[in-house]
Length: 114
Image (tube, rainbow, N blue to C red; front, side, top):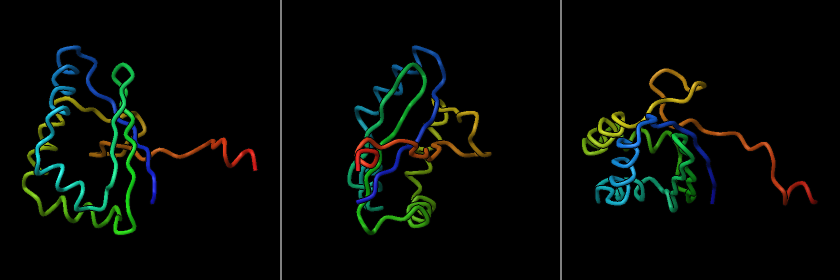
């Protein structure tokens, strides 16, 4: 299992934040299927204000390249991602057209106590 953390902002608008959270209580079944098909076994999104952090755990079949290829071939994922841009905005360190930015681990208690 691999674990990844990502950061993203959403527009700082209470109505849009409420809509975004409601959409994520009813994620489209095709999106859930595409996530599982890519080898993602767990995904959580946490929010503080308008900053989001996503935890993603994957099995050994997962790769970012494979996920990108699967998403590129899936028209439902394209519709979902277009809808998400209504709410999402890149954080300052994001590259052009990048949404979720992979975070770097800087501390691990278990590793520090060895």
